[in-house]
Structures are given as C-alpha cells and as structure tokens.
Image 1 (cartoon, rainbow, N blue to C red):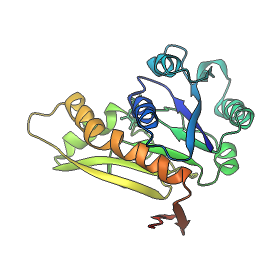
Image 2: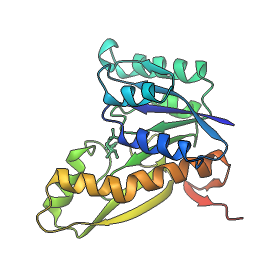
Image 3: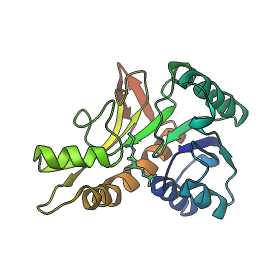
Image 4: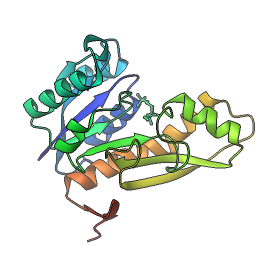
Length: 209
Ligand code: GAR
C-alpha cells in the first residue's frame, strides 16, 4: 500500500475528489496518509480532518526563502514515508531539492491543457482568465509529473473541456474542475499506486493489462 501525501493551499476540492475516490475503493493500492497545507486557514485542512486524515501545516510565510521552505517540506515528506506526493492546488513552486528527491513521484494537477496556459504565473483563476482572453474554444486539465521546469514534467492524463460564450473565469474554473480535474486526478493516482505508469524520455505511458 503506497502512502499518498497531498499538498494543498486552498479550498481543496481536488483533495475532496481524492477522498471520495478513496471512500469508493477507487484508489487501488494507495492510501491518503497525510495532508500538508501551506496555509493554516485552508479549507482543505477541514476536509482532511473530517475524514480522519492526519494533517500538518507548514506555512510559506514562516520561512525566509523558498529553499528553507522546501527543506521543511522535504523533511515532512521523509517523516511521513511518502511514496507519492500530490500537489492539489498547492500554490508554491518547490525547490529542486525536493523534486530531485522524488523523481517522477510528485504529481500535479494543472487547470489547462499543457503546454498551453502553463508555467510561471499561470495558476488558479489566472489560467482561466488567460484562456478567456485568448478566445480558444477548448481548455481542460492536465495531470503530470513534476520536474524542474514549472508544468514541464511528463503528462499522465489530460481531458478537454469546452469554453462557452458568457463564461467568466469562475464559471470556467468550475466546469474544468467538475468535468476534468476531479476525474483525471484520482484515476492518475490510482494508476501510479498500481505501478501502471512508465516514463520514457519525459513521456508517460499507461501500462495496459
Ligand atoms: C485547481 O483548479 C488546480 O488545478 C489549480 O488550483 C485549483 C485548486 O483548487 N492549481 C494550479 O493552478 C496549480 N498551478 P482546489 O484547492 O479546490 O483543489
């Protein structure tokens, strides 16, 4: 059974999708063993507590720089025996020291179809604002491994979502979450826990039975 450690910063609807999938028995060979939040007031913490999942708060604001913050996260992941780390609305880019310690073991959900609308500065509602400004008709979500390039790791799963006339960033964000993120994140984590994802040349492939 793999220990899944989920890193959060906000509302935690993706964490909730993982908890719901776990409760339905859909996370095969994995268990959410700890939720770590970068903010003490994140609602994601309440979701974890309501489901009996251990929590830790490691606040960005308590550290002098990204390196010392990343060291604290690294230490916590080690103490929690993390086998896989999920960034579920985690709003800090971790230093390479953490990424190197967990090669192809850190998984992020991003609210666009990478390589569009991603990289530095593209997070949360900013992504959906940029999508609407561009006039594209399709957006979506991507689940990918984390490497040292922001949003540059091997793509595990993607799902497209329609952009509709009259969408606001908030409306579009909700559709992308409901139709894509909450669906492909738990599926990807279950596949990872079953060791059904292989990575070759920064490309991920799902091993079919
Ligand atoms: C989600 O849309 C997630 O994809 C996005 O923030 C939101 C968090 O929502 N993450 C990023 O933009 C990371 N680059 P949640 O806290 O309700 O899961």
